Image 1 (cartoon, one colour):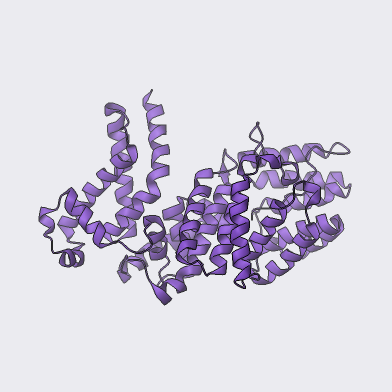
Image 2 (cartoon, one colour):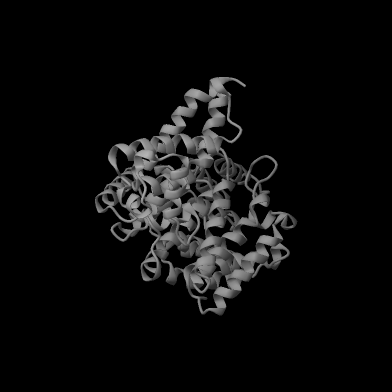
Length: 432
């Protein structure tokens, strides 16, 4: 294995381990910015040592041990854990591996998961909701500022400033890094749900890069949603989010063809959908609706996903119900993306002209560089037989997309406009 190959392997390992590493370090040093730096230091050390010593049998444990040794050095120097020392009656100057385990045990909480604990901590009320979500997407999801900016439909500079200010504000506030309970936890719940939701979305439809999906992010969001549902089993929106990510994840294997290109929903091999995940999702949705949460935004989105999951064949999909659910969702969760998906649903249920009319009601300034908007317009025009106009829209969508496979898909759609009928003439549904 060449040095370049080893470096690539290290980068992949670090991407996988990064969030958990930061979460554990943050509980030790009580500073999310410093925890990021310590994790990065461990990564740099690996880049320096592993090409000579080889990749460890357990690389995650190696990174963790390296970062924590550095953290202990800093703790000794700056006495950042004085309060915890008093609680456990230990002298930090004698700290070793056993002491570190005792310190961590003293910081245990009823969540039982470091990543989810860090999300709750980062969603502190001293931060604005936007800052809470941006910070945790960066820390936990490992999303770049560009990816977060695209999720928020704003500029990368705005997100970068938001994250820097959030770290600074948390540092000044010196909050407890223990998971809140009772009412305080409830007040942070909406931000925590938003974080898990956006992490899943980035995994389901990657905003940039060579791959259409990032399954590791989807799996992490599912895991966090399941833990959260165990903590709050009577919260309809928690169950709604769980239902949504389970049902959506059931389609991951069928969303990409052998050539790496996206497979539209109506052409997917439904035999490849994961029936166990669908069953779990539908069960969670049923519980959420039984608790009276049928009008919540996550429950509504889960109900939309369930419409597809319940259809054994694409032509059996109840698009009239889907259009009606989007009519409700636009009230519960107003956003231009919801309006776009509503237009798509109405175009399928009631014809292309209905979809075009709804698209005309969306302010273009609200989605200035959002590729699915011209893609949807191109689809409506294509199905209306207005092929030259459709081609222009698909070409614009391709120019806006930052994902290589998505861009190739739009280019193929543009090429199909030179034919009476194209192979991919299904409705395009933008990111959910």
